[in-house]
Image 1 (tube, rainbow, N blue to C red):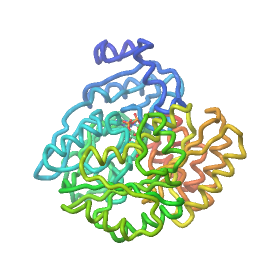
Image 2 (cartoon, rainbow, N blue to C red):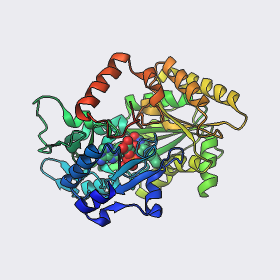
Image 3 (cartoon, rainbow, N blue to C red):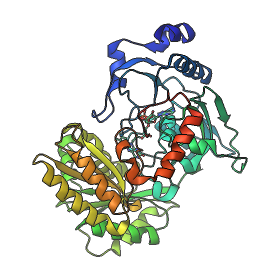
Length: 447
Ligand SMILES: Cc1cc2nc3c(=O)[nH]c(=O)nc-3n(C[C@H](O)[C@H](O)[C@H](O)COP(=O)(O)OP(=O)(O)OC[C@H]3O[C@@H](n4cnc5c(N)ncnc54)[C@H](O)[C@@H]3O)c2cc1C
């Protein structure tokens, strides 16, 4: 396979040096890894099609990989796969200022797409902590959510076109960018969130939104998670332009501050801190301040309107993933819970995790405005699935989702039946068999 690919694409396109391959073999959390045959870096859709053709004829399994920031182990090998890195698929980002759309190669980072949109007077509103490493193709392959889902939805809402090489080897390209186009099955929508199991996405066209005139961020100290849910709900109802409602707890904030030597913002540290972000017309800061004045039981607050001040208030929330990772490979649960049950489920999870092992520790943070919490358990062996069983069962019993935005990958695959019926999984399999008949694309992920 290596020789054939080198002959077809050029020797420099196929990495086998263990030092160069190693970073591609382990995921961002350090929990998932496996040896790869090699890493191949095609530069065009034609070269991707060649790689898929070689894999089909040789029966070589293929793992598509973007920025390798995925949190469910879906972008790294299980053992013996070829990694197709999209790092060299770097066309664009090209903004169409009239249509309000951006066209970009799959390997362009999310941050570069955001910057191109901003430079053209528009905005790409999908945003997440890994923006400078995650690729735009990866965000489409995972239907990434992030910080602004409240106002702007998930990635699929912005996807207006896509080019991909299917597992059959066929190139499908629908990049025209027509907003209204009811001409059959929505292939871009189907590939969005398919986690590299149906095709390799090579380019995407995304709809942009107007850039806000002003943005303001507030930190709000509160007594408990139930109060955070209630305040976030009132803010959604009464504050025009609310874009984010994020929550962190005192122990997580302390960990982040200690890890990255950050100053305390609200003193004394409240049990729960809610971050609210408002964007839109001028006066966003005044609207946010007026809302805070109406909230009972505040344990301190801070507001920032300038870029540096806003970034400083976001920092404790954004550094949760990196700080927790430093404690060792975590077990990560990215769950959605019904608002009314969120507090009770977290209490139940805390008690179950505490009973598993004296060293097990639960960390809670996330996008509370849309019911999406990131529950992280540290102190357990990566292979120990007791917490996975307990947490995901509690979430499913409460009517929640076992994966809000990170996907199923390999991390949640055994628990997919908690979320999807046998009929739905049978439909998934039928789609997989049609688009990837040899099962070469990301075997073991999702299904
Ligand atoms: C600090 C941090 C914060 C994060 N915050 C969020 C958040 O708020 N919201 C959120 O949704 N996620 C979040 N994530 C998870 C991650 O950033 C997203 O899932 C992101 O979309 C992955 O992009 P990537 O390019 O790194 O993909 P990878 O990790 O390389 O791959 C992820 C999956 O997509 C597949 N894939 C990648 N590229 C392609 C392609 N071109 N064609 C087909 N399949 C492909 C892979 O096979 C794999 O299954 C966070 C991660 C980190 C590290």
